[in-house]
Image (cartoon, rainbow, N blue to C red; front, top):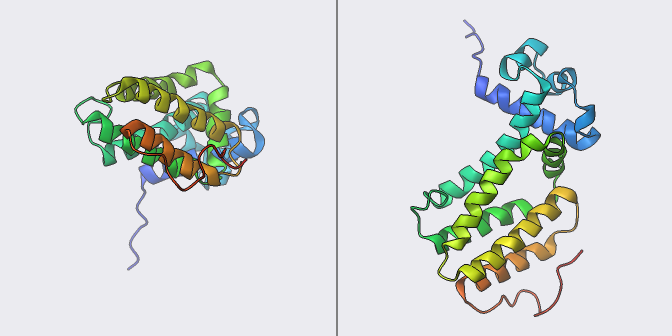
Length: 200
């Protein structure tokens, strides 16, 4: 006897978010419709509305989901990093590792996130909260001035990734190694000759 297929609401919700992110990337957030998202995800319109009762709720969730993924990745590597209970320097270096995973590979997902974020300034709230937590983390490093410099450089990499997601990224890996060295007071990486700009 064939067992009935069980539903996984969490997996369905994630498929809808991924579909919305893809459509926003390909066509812009202004062209995103609930019908298009449901069709792309292979979910009924009623199924979509169960998870996201409005287009605004869906776009807000796209932004929140993207931020939560980075937050969860950092917390998995350095539990307590954002709450202030983890040693600041190792936790900040873990964030550089998280960022390396995001900015060293060209991808479309970042532009979909950016398109959704621009739809309504209120959607920026989870982004600003996460940024504030990261700023506080880097400020707790043994050398707060170095921490501030590295944090702002990371913000530049994030901005570049959001606005030009398919830009050549091979220079970012060495740049992040240099930022880690600056943060910890070690010598700069020999992976790239000193003073050489990242490829672009």
